[in-house]
Image (cartoon, rainbow, N blue to C red; front, side, top):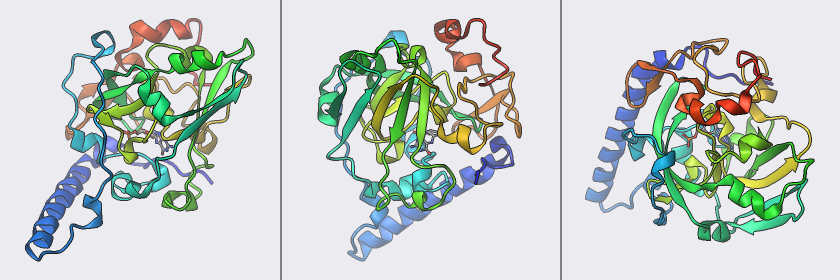
Length: 315
Ligand code: MTE
């Protein structure tokens, strides 16, 4: 039962996306105005949970020198299949998701397994990093994420020498996640990284964006961001982290192994079987006019992780 990303290259459907986005914006603005004029309460979609401000200085060393994509796009155009397969589904329906209380269970091949609450993660020293973010569907964004290096959390549990991979699991909330009823993926959403990728300073345990806690649609309260890989590696709303010996099965690889590999490093020279990865549409651009960069522009920092590996083969 493998759902596939659209058969039309995403860059080709841009005008419709943009049209829909504008239409929705106009409709919601008009709806709000009308409701207010009639003394009615604002419609449900206006009641997104309030976000908390996060005090996080920008880390210039790990930030790109590019204008961030608008918050409206980053929080309104998402992939979060637990809330539906449409790009606007998460923003429309993720507000019911429960993000408190929230704990992450960390175990497997570690010295000190532990369960950590989100409050304790938020107390760790947070920083802002402006990263490029590239979806496998050939659109990209620039996002000022807030978080900490995943390796800082990993050090607290002490991975043993048997820990060769890290497996991340997303929460399952059938009562708030309508997408779980549809078997497009083998739920829960699971992603994985090789241990050296997970411990790399670029791998960000992310709790916020734009100086605030994450919106539910962006993966509240805590997600991973690996900017040199296609976006589907950046697993959202994590409740379990396991250090394991064997390469874990991952959501998209299980759904369509010939289309989505384990490593999933951004590579302009390896086309997706159904579309080119040479160029990308930097939102809100209408066309895929930006050249895709090897490792999404992070080659200086990560290429050595793959020395000796054939980058054309995704294992
Ligand atoms: N994590 C979960 N649990 N479920 C998902 O459907 N989608 C992935 C990734 N993480 C996904 C997920 C994909 S395909 C992308 S491109 C990014 O989240 C999108 O992140 P964003 O919505 O914050 O831009």
